[in-house]
Image 1: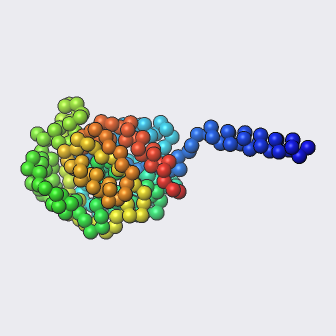
Image 2 (image 1 turned 120 degrees about the vertical axis):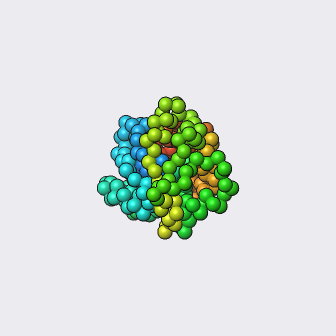
Image 3 (image 1 turned 180 degrees about the vertical axis):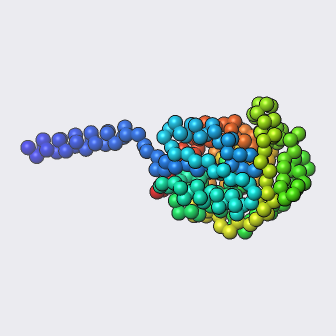
Length: 254
């Protein structure tokens, strides 16, 4: 009788383990908030948005106006406050500075940097750019009335070389100018010190040098993925970027 009970118990445990092993893993975070960068708007996230929505995520795109770091962070915090439950906060380019400052919000579970700046406390984008060698080919134009545009003639080559020419022309003609305070304001906090982070390096980026991206990712102790892409890797490789965001949603310790 005792032997039979042992066999029954062993069989039950085996069935339980087998059942658990075939259960699909569930993402620990279902809210994704996406932040665009300089000279762009939220429409660039459409491909990533559609992929994640189909997988059951709740995705919100921040309509940050790129007028100043303070205002862009404020709007991002408002979007974060509207979420129910933990959030994966994602930033591209200048959007990385925004999520670094806004990411200390309590419901942010993790950060994803997509070819983005990841400044530390006391750094500004201007300081970070001045720390590296100057780029004589840069298409950043002199400020006009407090805003900065990118040279349309260089937009395709520098910003989105792996997109079709017609798409690049539309993006250049619809670019959102950036307010000077977006570049010059120093961060008051750096959320990557206390939040887990993932970083996507765009290996053919002409806006932020790939080695600079690697350096920022290393400093933040991010989980790094490298993709052969231009600065707009989130547009040209939407599936791969969405997959990294999903890894973050599964990987955070919440």
